[in-house]
Image (cartoon, rainbow, N blue to C red):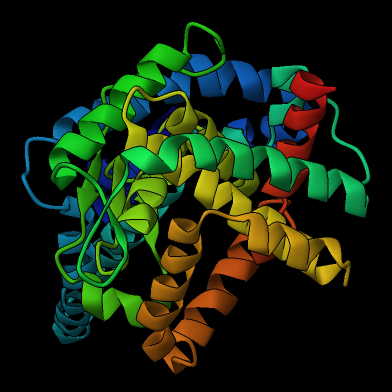
Length: 369
């Protein structure tokens, strides 16, 4: 015991108590992370009963701030590490340097632990089609065309209620905060049909530097370490609405991008607000038409011209708004980073966003055939 006690005292002198606690938490998180890979049912249970509680807690804490806390952290993190590393280099005492490096490492490991405990399970649990009881299968031209016609019919019903601005773009009938509350209310209502949606008070927040962020071609981001659904508001209103619903899906544990898109679609079309329904059908139609276009089918042109004029105008306005950022070098880098991250989580990378078409067609088959 004497030797062990001596070794422990030496170790505790070198490693601060906070760092030791984080190292222990990181080890537990690593074990849990491995279990996600081993057992999909365990990942589902953890995501719904543990991660959901932690995500909601973070969302409640960050909601105290009227701005995006994550945006502030990201802006400050590089200066923080630059100052911290400079401070560490200037330390002359070896013991102090060791303790400082342990603290620095503990902050990095704390991020890893927060990822595992709040979000990682969503990548390893059962898929959304399994949860919804719909069948995902190979798609043909006719499947895509029929789904597109369904979406167009629904758009035809809702477009008379939609307002436009001077440029011809559709506009939502309220501000950002009310929009976020309507989406949150729709998520709560949809839980009656889909019990796998966890209860959450989380809402979306606008990004202050949205115009600068546009050069990354990122429309939104969920930050697991603050529990915030952050939205780029520099584009069209329908982009803002759908992105908010998408990021709020991540906020509720739907980690895979196609599944977050599908949840955004379901939440929008089941809303009491006409503009949310319009956004849901329009954004999904864009994905379906893109898939139909890639087949080279003549169905694409027919579906395009059957779209309501208001929707074609929205697409034209979006293309014009997006044009300055299309060839951004920063966007190419951010896209490559995002693609790598998504592939590391077991998805098909940035292609996974478009895989929502599979889910949309499966839903159409289940409800209309």
